[in-house]
Length: 173
Image (cartoon, rainbow, N blue to C red; front, top):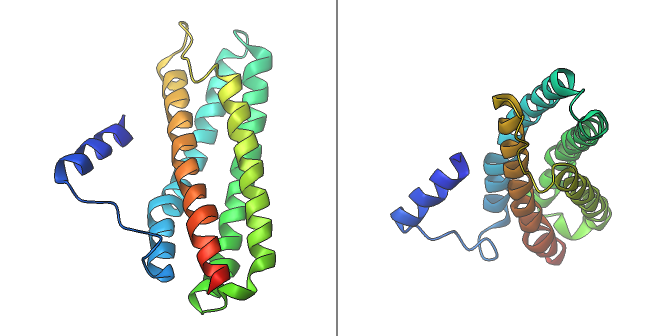
């Protein structure tokens, strides 16, 4: 819902999306950190708390699905936290310092981790039946499904910027 409101405001403002394929790499990294990493640092623990609550309260309604959903989500969360730390502490400083052409190894690792995150997102989508909220769902369960779907959408944009714009440009620099 919030993302929809933001999109609507951006469309109204007529502000074009920056050309990240032409912007300085430092500006793109700053954008990724502000728009994707910082919100994830806040959102990931909140989603875990919600997933645990839904699994605890409603385990009798869908025991296998909710248990697996929690396990997949916690694995994704831990992977993303470690992944972002590596980008923030190793890869992004390399790129900012002009050593992007020497970052082939770290980029390869990041791309593999992006693939792993994509697999986890596909599993979450499958477990939630494309984020279809069950009839018996409480408000927390409904909110969890909506926020997981928003997480997926945001991660796809985030990974696209890194895999298809930042990494190729950094390696070519």
